[in-house]
Length: 367
Image (cartoon, rainbow, N blue to C red; front, side):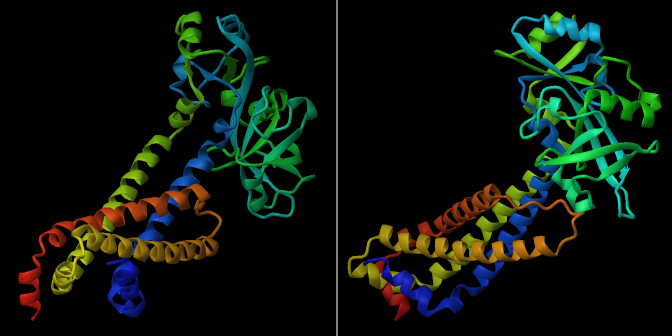
């Protein structure tokens, strides 16, 4: 027996599979929506760190891995620069503030970032004059345009936007990349309680060879806390917690997918016992019969994925910009593979019933 029979059943009796397809379509939409929220939260919070071109990020030891509490002075910086394996060191500072945008009634949320080593996609700092900045395109949604001079913070510190950069936001705020001198001026004018002196930065981005984290901390006598870029990303407030929470929900939803497919095809197999008995009597193997069940499960899951993708895209277009939903190609690939795998595993539960079909008894029951 070829696989034409299960395909013919799908084509001629689609009503048998409507309920399963509808439920799986809803679950596919939910998986994409949850994944899109997770990606939007993660990418929107971590872009400024993911873009860093270094091997380690060095905080002061008392900062508890927080940019806002960390301070590294010139003397500590000199010690780090002299550590074994360190080849280049660049300062980095971040300030979270509101900004008045020309022609807009609502202020924009910005993260003013002073830097020395250019992050990925950000122009070299030597191209910026004092008071100029390159803005993350997230700010474009809040009315910022190239050539605008935004007024940052309560002190209304002016920064002129001279270009765009992608995927460098910080804690859901669009980043404006400026020189360290401009950052210090903004920080001291708008956060006098957290003012920084000349040469002081919040953290250092360090380049070199091998694992520099332990080497740097040993060289400074534990006056610093060094992290890899990946660890620094996970140390950002709420990032690790939201990742674990959303992933738990996503994998729980996949378990529901498996249960739905298992229940549906178990019931369908019970209805077909007589048919399977006849097919076995004329030479069909249990493996071929089960392959037909798996094929139908895969077809149903693929149709459900397509429908779910369309619904998720429509939802993404209708949501306000404040909702951090970001549907990436990688999320579609993951959802497709996970949905198909869960459907195949769910359909496999009916294998035992197929294997135990006895042609004589099944035909007798059917008659």
